[in-house]
Amino acid sequence: LCDEPFSKRPTRLGSWIALSTTADYVKAEQIARHGLKTHHDDFILLNNLAVSLAYQGKPHDALEVLKKMPQKTSEDLSHATYLATSGLLKFRLGEPDEGRKLYRMAVEDAKHKKETGAVVSALLHFAREEYGLGGRSKGDELVKEALLEFDKLSALQRIMANRMLELVTPA
Image (cartoon, rainbow, N blue to C red; front, side):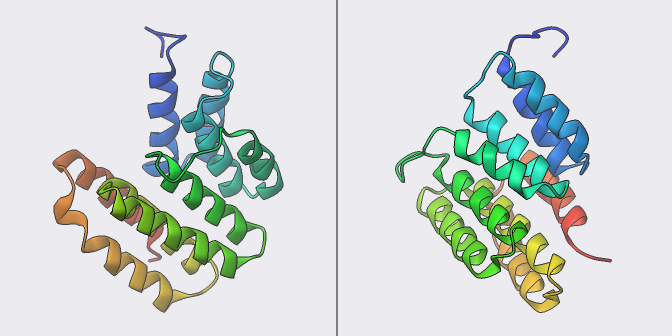
């Protein structure tokens, strides 16, 4: 980011790492907001901002960000991400049944497009929400489903998925 302050790539990656591997949601928000100063309608930055806000307990703010995200069609590779983030927000807004439906749609969309990283990510984030509601068995089932996909991930994706798994699963 210091080398390329106007590039969206470092802010996309930095906000994602803060969200997915360090669980530093304030830092993820800061990085995403920095990138949005020059890339106002970047889907990934808006998504990462919405997720960071939701995880900070600000689902209504996150919903406002979601509304600003460019709409994704079912043919778009980012459609699964949009569905998963919508599912997260439904959970955080007290509508878990709708959240489950959206997360499941995200998983199926990513599977259809053979985007295994997105499948695993959606399942692990989905599991986190189930664990948060006290649904240990539901969360465990989702983690098992995600683990079945791990052998299809690249070595780097597997490392990142394992870190996400550590953050998601209760002790």
